[in-house]
Image 1: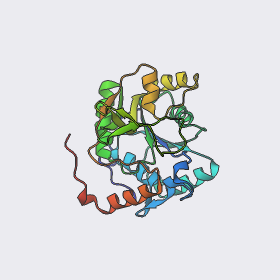
Image 2: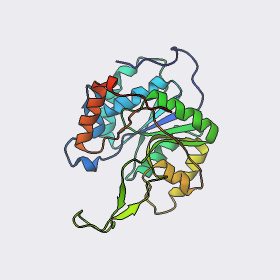
Image 3: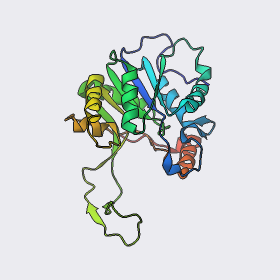
Image 4: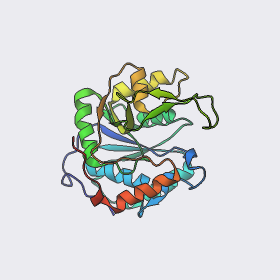
Length: 259
């Protein structure tokens, strides 16, 4: 079933706003529990399709780039979108093959989006419950500030462990002051030229970046943080699928957080 659009069908979309949906991750922390975590049905709809439909329903995008892992996965992802092909109001969908690292995949997605892109929204499809309302709030911020990301303040107590340890027994724990610590989410949105240039610089060093704000920050970009109004969990481990399914089944239990 196609999602409802937040704007009337046929109404004009903003120009040059592109979504880059990252689907190429290997999901190693699933430890083989599922074949491909973003294609596992969550109450009848995969994480990939849920992400796609949410970006579509926001109606601010005039193009979508899907970054896939290999040709076999591309075929499966395309099959997920088979019922969208007859809808002439949809923005065009492009495909880009990802690389060995997340930053390689994002670069390929940005390059495929094209130089006529004005704003790029980069989203991990492993976050299938993102809300169109939060995407639209992020759009308002990126237009004003050039770089913005969904994120929320850390509430857990955070400890640092010696990174050389191979197990978690009898650790020496170091306190980290959580004040000022934020947990980054996606989508992360940027003025296109700014983030594309930052990724070109990142390709020239040996640092492994785990998100797009890290790449932008390394290039000297300041980021505006937008706290989501709803839960936006990431599917990382097998138990996360059950949590996502619970949230989908029980939308009335989820209270919108005050802005």
